[in-house]
Amino acid sequence: MRKFVFFLLVLCLPVFISTTGTAQTKKDWPTKGATIGAAPIGGVYYVWAGGPAKVLGEKLGIPASVESTGGPVHNVQLVNAKELHFGMVTAAPAYEGWNGTGWAKGKKYQNIRAIFPMYTTYFQMYVMKKSGIKSIKDFNGKSIGTGPVGGTPATYWPMIIAEAGVKPKRIVNASSSDLDNQMKDGLLDASGQAVGLPWGLISATETTHEIVVLGVEDDIATSFIKKHPDFAKGIIPKGTYKSLQSDLPTLTVWNFMVTYKDMPDDFIYAFTKEIFKNKPLLVSVHKSAQEVEPKNILYCPIPLHPGAIKYYEEVGIKIPKEMRP
Image (cartoon, rainbow, N blue to C red; front, top):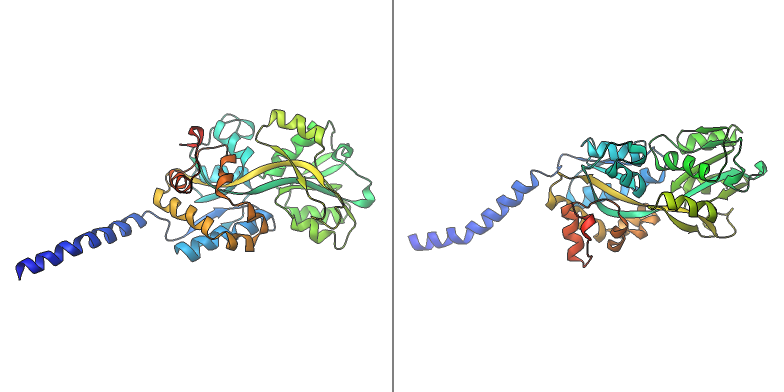
């Protein structure tokens, strides 16, 4: 009888240890709730973040809240300081933050780690057709809106405009919806963003107003990329907006989700895996999530989290040395 009891204990012991180990591991997960830094309410980031928030809540049992922030630059700062669990960033601000260049002004934000690719951001402006503006080269003496301070458009649109060799009368920083209202009231000549396609605000505005959509001409893009190699040329396809009757050249930059380096490896592995398993859910929130593909992580300019690396290696993605922490 004693031998039989001992045999049962031996059989049960691995299960007990395994279960206890899992529970112990998950104690380090943000089970009480996770925060995702996006951008101001009304922008693509804020909408897009709803997808990963659903994955966390519905697939991993972790309630997640989407936080309104200034955008990628602020998200780099907040995640680096562990004031957010996750942050949505564009490649250029993340690269500059990591290396202490550009907006970072010598301070390095190297507590951040990338997890998964999101989508390509397209730099786009729009003006009222009656303004007569046909290019960003026509911005001399004009009032230009570039989104809230801390966002990708507010950081880079002024630099792009300067590359075009023009001097606006003023640059206005506010939410896209505020800038849109100023445009309609005649207080602003142009409003720009750096977002996925389509930018919902353009789609909405062109239902009531005649507008012209502007990109970044090839010569300006070429000279800008020489100074900022994390950017690339792209095309906004004709028909993206009712007002766009032909393909529109512009600048693009990739977006990524980041976390901080101390996040548990097994949690980030599980999150990364669920993100790709649930791509249809992400696409249902915003169709730019069609670009959420494992291979696109290779566009990332900063190191990845070890938990994410484990997933990518499992699906056959070779992660180069410079992307490893």
